[in-house]
Length: 348
Image (cartoon, rainbow, N blue to C red; front, top):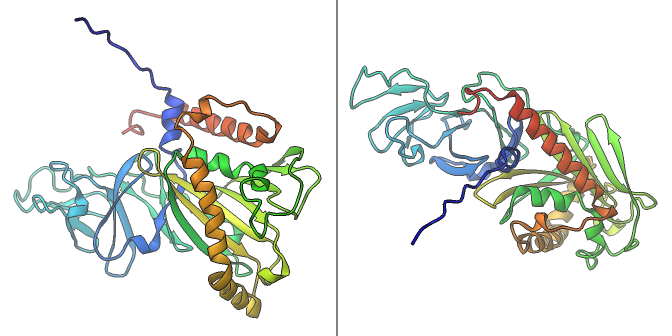
């Protein structure tokens, strides 16, 4: 019996997008995930160990001891470093080997051989900079949208993991029309037409994909933003007066590739409220609204997870999908630019 060798050629652009674009900030987990003991997560194509030091600051390294490759997450948290459980090798939070107790003075000591990740913690989430340089000393500042930083806004983080490629999550958000069908029984999405004409409106940091003749009725638009070295998606859902003060209900979304065909999904649910209105909104959200919002999100999850991993290779798109097409093209351009600027050092 003879066997034929099949060579599979992988698309470098798709490979780059699958694990997340470089030199951007990504939220990778809720703050509550990281407590005293080291935690191991797969994000952005890496296995990462996270831990907190004595003052509560989060640190992150690739979860790989430079000695023999044992997971550092199995080791001991020493504050500014982790001691590997396998042979006691101590790795500082910047990736430098501080001590090799089994062989003091060996060449491994003082080497910076472990990938280090810059961390920021904000809005109940831990953000990581996906640097092309594994030993980048100074990342650009993380600048989050006003809805998450301004005192005029109040927000709650909704975190969930979906069993699909993160690009399917992005496609779902860049599709306002599905709200009129999949979510038509929702208390906030039962109004509005079930057909619409869409347009794309450019902005300095991205674009809107919006219904032409319908506003503040249903899920009427989505905005894509590339600002502050982070990609975010924005939308608003009109709310009845029974939903409390604050006007429309805003959602800020950001997403990170996790395990294969798994996405870390972050939705911050926001209202523009202050003073007693802020207190009222937060009370109503926890006691009446949060459960409803989870039901809507669950509808999205079930629908997207039920799609085959290659579903986007067998599509027949029409005008309602122009926003998806525009965003896919934009991400492809960014991936091409990334590949053009890669050096052998940045590919490690």
